[in-house]
Image 1 (cartoon, one colour):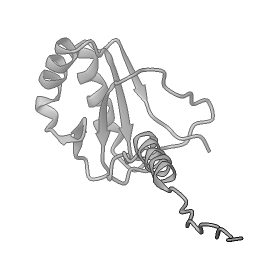
Image 2: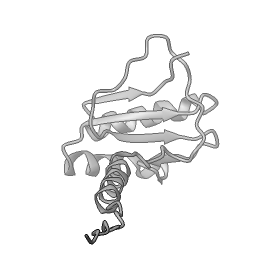
Image 3: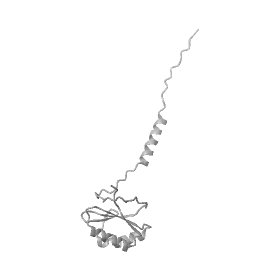
Image 4: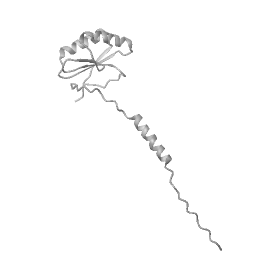
Length: 133
């Protein structure tokens, strides 16, 4: 009587579905991660206990640096051109909200001139950004 030998087949684990799942997870986390940093300008906002978070989508942001430089949405602009540029930007888009982000050591008189320019340009509201203590 002849014995039949068992066939020894090598069972190799199929890793293709595992690699697909890992790749999909990698793509998912890359798409959901936020890589956007806030401005690289170091502005020390003043603190206010009664501050509230803004509910607006994309307001125009005016930054006042300690050196007296004015930035409109990250681009430097002289005070003399601020009102005209603000007026054009406010009427071109549906944005009617302006946010003033000023350093705590910035000149107060310059901040008042920026507020006057925003009012003259037709801003519906002007928010002064602060930090909670």
